Image 1 (cartoon, one colour):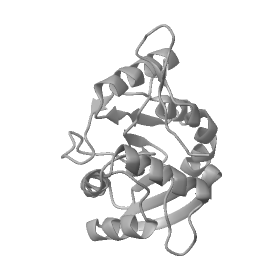
Image 2 (cartoon, rainbow, N blue to C red):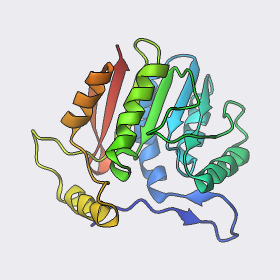
Image 3 (spheres, one colour):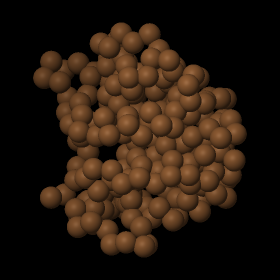
Image 4 (tube, rainbow, N blue to C red):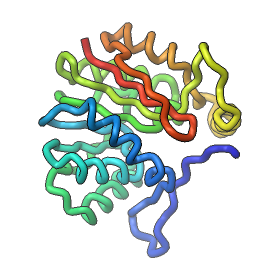
Length: 210
């Protein structure tokens, strides 16, 4: 089966969007986050998409301040709608941020980026790494989640199909090699601290700022 990452508009036509995969992976992601997030501070999410992930995490980790962002105005509206529905007091107003450009944020104690690296040009990943080093404190985590290739092991058939589907939609998209992301991160001053297998042939990559 080919993976997909659809947004589903609510029948009432409101701004809120829904990504079915979010409800399937959010709890396994949260288990990893519980081990790597700081005890206090600001967590910036890059490419928040629908807003479902960050709203869920804000409820699970109320001691942290959560800053969503996305480059797409429709996504920003969806994030705002999910945030308003949740009424979590530790959620900030979403920011319009293009991962590949200079961010309007000067500091974050942790950064999350879920399911962006494969659905964006490589320049977005490079911008993510470059900005993460700029705004994270020493030892601050950058958490990436999604499907990746590894040169040391075969790619799952479902991920191969997903890669083909992505490239048919945009030749600049596609599954990246962990080794390439880690090398680009190291060049910026981020070390791959942990790599964890996740459900549905996804990986969690935890980088730390040196």
